[in-house]
Length: 220
Image 1 (tube, rainbow, N blue to C red):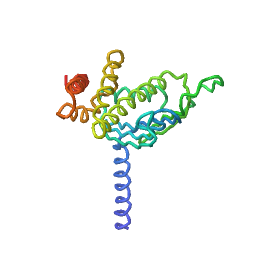
Image 2 (image 1 turned 90 degrees about the vertical axis):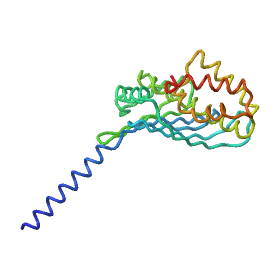
Image 3 (image 1 turned 180 degrees about the horizontal axis):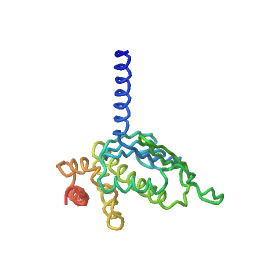
Image 4 (image 1 turned 45 degrees about the vertical axis):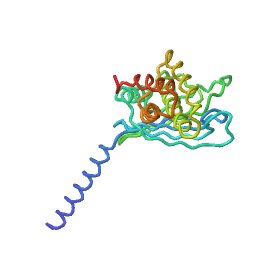
């Protein structure tokens, strides 16, 4: 009888430990976009509540390229962006409702999916265009984040294979940044630092990389 009691207590303790570990696991928000013909044609962003993030994409590295390219990147989002993502996910009901407008005359801008999972709840919703303001803001944020990471990917490619292309790429981003600050520019700090430190890159490009890097909150 005593042995049986001990077994029951052990099972209860094991169950409590499993539940405790599950509750301690970070929540995760995902955004996925599939848009054939665009650059990239597919990408997904995963942001955990501890700030760790993962990005994957596939498509052409440049419009004129005949080759397809796959890209995967781990990074950390800033606390401000992480908090904004999770605040908007809550406002959007953790994507447990239909987010699509279902308007027949709406132009197709890609198949988008927002998803959420934590120890207590999960949800996902797919849409072309959403009238939900929180979903709209999340869509814009994740698209901006993708633009920054794809910019970093192109810089890495150019630094390795065609350094002369860096000048135009950096010029275009710097001009765009004057009007619209890039999202999470610090996520691509490693490649910007490589460009700055490379004596084989022309000085004007190194200077542009330095100015872009200085836009990162981490360098202010």
